[in-house]
Amino acid sequence: MLGLFVHDHKFPKTNNIFYHSYGFDGEFFNRYLSIFNRLTIIGREKEFIIPLEKEADKAPTEVNFVTIKDLKQLKNKGVRDSLNKEIINSDFLVIRVPSILGLFAVKQARKYKKPYLIEVVGCSWDAIANKGFKNLIPAIGITYFTKKAIKSADYVVYVTEEFLEKRYPTKGKNIACSNVTLNSVNDDDLNARLQRIKQINSKDKIVIGTCATVDVIYKGQQDVIAALARLKQEGYSNIEYQLVGGGDTVFLKNYAEKHQVSDQVIFLGALKHDLVFEWLEEIDLYVHPSKQEGLSRAIIEAMSKGCPVFGADAGGIHELIDDQYIFGKGNVQQICDIYKKINSENLREQAKKNHERSKKYLKSVLYSRREKFFNDFIKQSEG
Image (tube, rainbow, N blue to C red; front, side, top):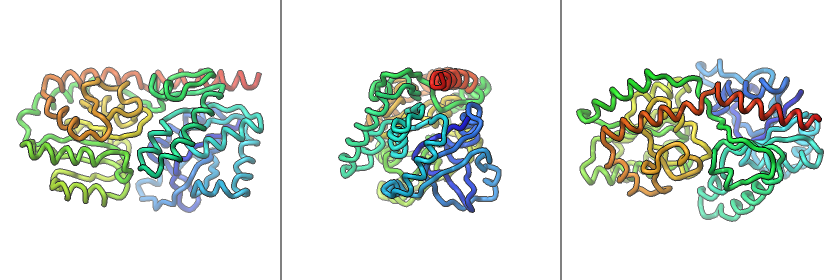
C-alpha cells in the first residue's frame, strides 16, 4: 500500500540524502509509515550543509522523495508529468494545505480518481496576506481555491477545534486532531515551574522567549522587541528576550538596535528538539507573536512545561490560552499591557491551567484518533 504525502515544505538535503526538519522529524515520518507500507513525499527541497551532530537525523530509507526547488517549476510540463506519475502510481494521497503543491495534487487526484485526504494545518489567507500588501491578490486567489478544495473533499483532518473549521468548512467527514503531539506531560515539570514562579519577584532579570524562524516577518518577533523598548521607557528594564529559531538575524538585530534594546535581545539559533524543552524550563514567560498559525507546536510544548504563555490572536491560539493573555496581531501596546498585569498569582494560575491543557495533546490520545480516521478513509476508499 503506497501512500503519497504532498506539501510545500522545504525538506533539507545534502548529497541526495534528506534529513529531518522542524515539524518533519522522526515522529512525522513514523506517523504515516505506521499506516502505509511505503511512503512517497512530494515537496520542495533546500540544499543544506549538515552538521556532524545531525547525521543521525536522516529521513527513513523507506521514504522516497520527489522534490522541486521552486514552485515556479510547476509551469514546466516535464515537472508536472513527473508529479502526475507519482499521483497515478499511489494508492492514497495525504494532501496538506495551505500549499500550492497541495492544490495541484487535489486537482490531479480528482482527475485520476485517486482517493485523497486533506490535512488543514493553517490559514492560506493569513499565511500569504501577512507577507505584505503586494501579496493580497495572490492571497485572494489561493484562499478561494483552498476553500473550494476543502469543501469538496471526502475526508478532512483539521489541527484546530474551531478556527480552521469555521474558515474552511467541508461537506466531507472530518475530525479535529492536532499534528502536534507530546510524548509525555510530567507533574515534576509543573512543580519546578511553580518553584521558579515563587522566586520571580526577587529576580534581577525576567526571561521571556519565542521559538520560531527569525527571518519570516509574520512571525512577529519585532513586535515584542518594540514592546521591550516601550516597557523600558516605563521603567521595566530587567526583561531579557530570548529567540530560538534558525534564519538570518540581520533584520531583527537591526530592529533591536534601532529601538535601543540590543543588550536585552539574545539570539540562540536553532536548537535540537530536546534542547528546546530544556530551554523552556529556563525561561519565565513564553510569548508567541506570530500573525499566522494553525495550532502552534511551540505553545503546546511550552504549556507542557508549565510555562505561562501569551500570544497573538492568530489561528487556533485562542483555543490554547485564556483570552486575557491574547493580544491583537502586531499590537505592541497590548503586549505591554499584558506584561504589566502579570504577577505571581496569575503566573501560578496559568502554569497549572496550561500544564493540564497540554495533556490533550499526548501522543497516546491523538494517535489512536488519527489512525482510526485514516483507517476509515482507506476502508471506505477501497470498498
